[in-house]
Image (tube, rainbow, N blue to C red; front, side, top):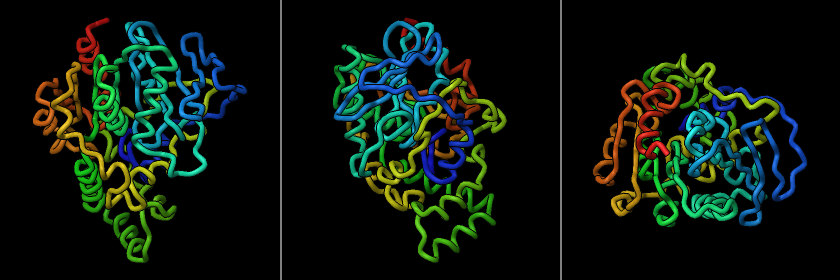
Amino acid sequence: MVKTFLHSTPIRIFLLALCLGLSPFRLSAGNGHSEDTISSALHGRYVMVNNARLWVELEGKGTPLFLLAGGPGSSHRYMHQFSRLKEKHLLVYVDGYGRGRSDTAKSVTEYGLSRDVEDLEGIRVALGFTQIDLLGHSYGGVAAQAYAVKYAANVSHLILADTFFSGEMWQANDDNSNHEIETNFPEIWGTLMNLRLAGAKSIDPPHQKIYATVPYGFLYAYDPGKFEQSQPDETGMTHPHAFNSKLYYQFVGDDGDFIIGGDIGKMDFRKDLKNLKMPLLIYSGRYDRVAVPKFANLYPRYAPQAQFVMFEKSGHNPQVEEPEKLFKLLDDFLGGK
C-alpha cells in the first residue's frame, strides 16, 4: 500500500491522485537545461543526470535545502507544503527518475535506491552546490539516509521525516496497516482476501482497486479534515507521473502490500546512523499508522546523536497537522539562516 502522504501503493496510488487534486498543464518544450518559470517565485528546470532529464524546482533564497518526496513513486508536488521555509532557505524540490515531470525509464529495472542516490548527487553537482541541507519525507527519508551515508561530506544538515530505517520497519508498516483495515473495514478485507485466495497480488489492478476504497485519512492522519485542502496550488502545472505505481512495485516487490521485497526489503541503516556527523533531526507523528511509533521510537537507539521529536497530534504529515510547531523546529534546527 502506498505509504507516505505518499508512501505506498493501492489505497495510496488512488488516494494520492485524489489528494493531490491534479490539474492539466502546458508543458513547455524543454531541452536538457531550459528553465521554465512557473510563477514569479518558483522556477523549474531540467538537468541532465545519468542520461536522463530530471526536473527540479527552486524557490526562495539562502542555503540550499533539498526536499525529497515519499512513495517511492511520488512527484515532489506535495513537498510545497514546506514552502514557508523559503524566506530563509533556497528550497530545491526534486522529481526523481520516473516521477513527476522527470523522464520515465524504458524498463522498471532502471529504478532503484542506488539510482536515486546517484541522481541526487548528480543534481547537486549540476546546480553547483558544495554542500546541501537535506530533508526526506517517508520514502524520501530512506533516500536521504542512503545519500547521507555515502556522501556525508556533502550534507550540512539532515532531516528525516516520518521515515523508515530498515526493511523490517517497512514490513511493520504493512502489517499494521493491514491489521487496521482488517479490524475497522472487515467488508473491504473480506473482499480482498477472496481476491488473494484466487492468486492476486498487490501489483494486480483489482487488488489496488480494493485497497483504494480505504479512506486516506484513516491510515495517514490524526485529523483527516486537515487534508481536504492541503495541496499547494501550482497553476498551469500537472505531473505526468504524480505517482508511478510501476516504480513503486519495483522498489517494494510484486506483493509489497503484504510482503516487502526489492530494494526496500534489503535496506537497513541501523548500523550506519550512529556514524553520521552532521546535525541530524528525526521526527514522526504519534498517530502515524504507516511509519509506526513502535519503530520510530527506536531511532534514538540507532542515532543517539540525533534530535528526535514526536508530534503528538499528527499522523504521517506534521507539516499539515502541526505546522506551527514543525516549522519552528525546522527553523531552529537549521539555525534560522
